[in-house]
Length: 180
Image 1 (tube, rainbow, N blue to C red):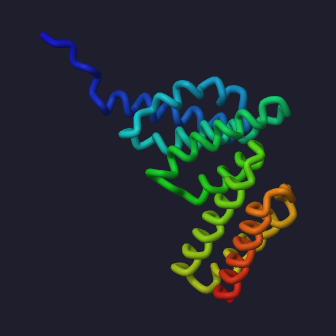
Image 2: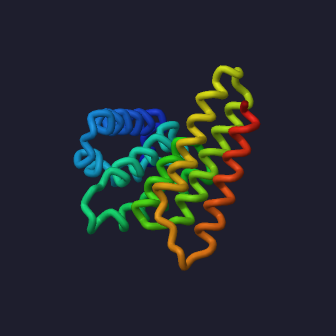
């Protein structure tokens, strides 16, 4: 008889348990313990329902690193991990996390485009909601604009950074106006 690999359901169960444990660690802000599960989370197959959450958790712990020597490296890794997920399953939370990781990696292009996607998605989601929810979306958009204009260190030698940042802020302000 041939050796038969374990049934997908059994493997999925193990992955689901792993991701549940990792999510528990994230909820308790135990980033070190979560980082120790990284290689196992990376091995969760794309066919598993828990893959997107595994990716989110792998990116999340990297975004919490405070050691200056590791911030840029782990910020770059975080962006790479999220880019892989965003291609097949984009979410607004991933764009928010991607912006934070881009900031760590000192990648203004990543921060600006991630905040644009987050803001634009927030606006389009609000259009499908009741008018009462529009005010919440407006506040979220104002917060994103503040992040762009006040918290993003723009390299003055790069005209792209400041031009694109200003363009995104202008478009987000227009979204706010249309939600009123």
